[in-house]
Image 1 (cartoon, rainbow, N blue to C red):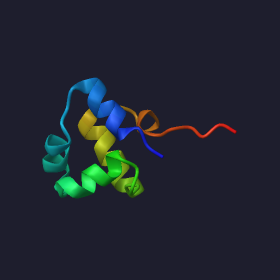
Image 2: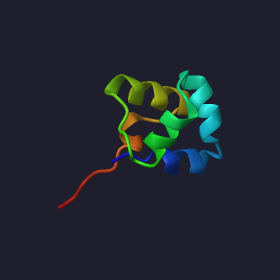
Image 3: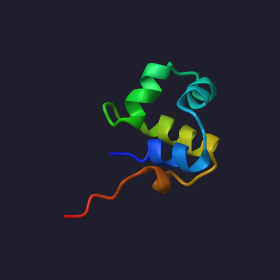
Image 4: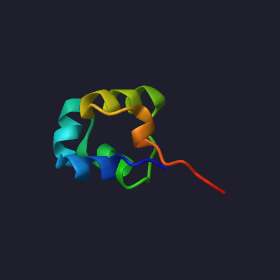
Length: 64
């Protein structure tokens, strides 16, 4: 699971803006944000760079 949606909300950034910066469709980014699909590692690093955050900030730690 990822925290992309939470980070976008914290920064006041819209999914459409991120989709344009990534060169991905809005539907793809929306799937990432709603955890219907997980981005490839390379894409996750690109998202972190675009949002100026660490990759670890985009990932939920699953604690059992």
